[in-house]
Length: 334
Image 1 (spheres, rainbow, N blue to C red):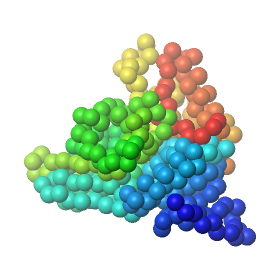
Image 2 (spheres, one colour):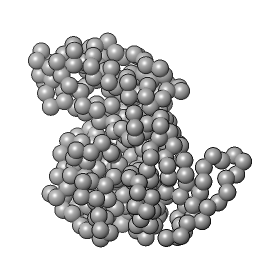
Image 3 (tube, helix red, strand yellow):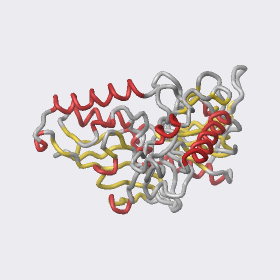
Image 4 (cartoon, rainbow, N blue to C red):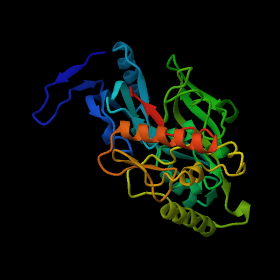
């Protein structure tokens, strides 16, 4: 693989490599690519728009003897202020396609925004993921963590996932092989990396196939699905700090609540009862609108956000004897 180096411009503090029609940026700040708007520079940042360019990016990482991370929309990700000493690969192009296979069956690229896919199926009168329109991540990220909202989860409708394995072969996994559970899958188990990251066997999510039900088969029509979506979006707008940088729910739903409230499994309930709404460390704040959201109130650092999440965990554990498990994933050295 041959790389040509372009000289830095006056306004840039990064270098750019061009490798087989693929641009690789050096020292790209991850604050540009995460919904928290924080994060230091990635050693290298690549946008791969085809299988060929993805394989070239992986080869580049191997040649540099660096780890790689495949990025979705960065909406569930906290990158260290020190950045990431590795290769960030962002999928685009061919990985953003939606293919209609007929009769409610769709094959969707990993880089496709989940909301775009959900709206596409809704317009065609199919139910199953239409309530997920408001989730800001990509399809690959949604599969990785089995994203869900308002009673729907991506794994409920997924029938298979196309992956690139560690030796560069494309494989098809059944839904059963994906091991979907609450905010987890075989791709995410035991990992501190979200999005379309490689799992322990080196598999990278390329696309997924879905089987959806027609509205008619449920005794509904497209207008009914639109009404359900509108209700979900209204709830989201009323209860979540959508106007401030955040990464969605900070902590996962509990398996069971505290001894005094065993059926209360919402982390936000305990955070609010602990009096932590509005609590700040630096410019990171527990949202005053929804206690299970940490927001960047303006100028926060990744360290602020991490420290605040740990403060919340410790405070809730001390007061209620329960352990909150972080849903937001950390990348880089903290």
